[in-house]
Length: 270
DNA sequence: CGAATCTCCTGGAGGC
DNA sequence: TGCCTCCAGGAGATTC
Image (cartoon, rainbow, N blue to C red; front, side):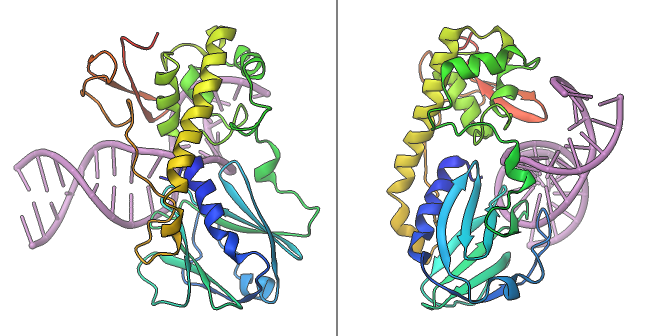
């Protein structure tokens, strides 16, 4: 499940494609979260890739006449191949470049998205209402405190709300709250400024720790076994229901919040 | 408007 | 080994 660090590592892995020109696009299955534009081949052919940026979990590939938006959803993986290889199951999209390199999207669950924005000044509704980047300077304790004051939900729900801050998925929401010693069930509006300081700090370190771990696996991006941007990590609470807390040895609890699993230590987190 | 719920999809795990 | 059920989840769409 690509979280923000995986998306960023994926973006970094695509950088070798900068200044390359598209020769062809093959859509094998365009039925993702939204349909892949059927005319993407005609749109992208002969266009040069100028920039690769990221906003939230969206990878933005800027070409000469517009922007290709890529989202990995739950199970999406982008892989860069030195040359064409026979596609396997769930390999839904290929973008081929003049160098012979092929960018391939595999997404078994098809929650991902590939969209085209025509024009360079154009914006997209998907990107318009997003909160600040968690690793950016705009995400700080005073901002978070102010936002949470108007939220009538539990802190874990608020932390995953992309209007508050982007890029914090289910795993890192639980992890950051554990590290900040805050109960996921605490009403968002009850967090003190001090708790917001701790939480912002832990969100940033949790994400950048994962980013650093992911950076070391970057070389695999060009490899054949498709480990692109994915890395093993040991979690404090996520997926550890019933196992002893790594700090106090109390069994980790699992609850549902907003149809999603939340993991926490009932003793360490208040 | 905010909050809660629904929805898309497939692979993997567990039960029998 | 096969079949069934359940679960996982990003985040926009829908409903209340």
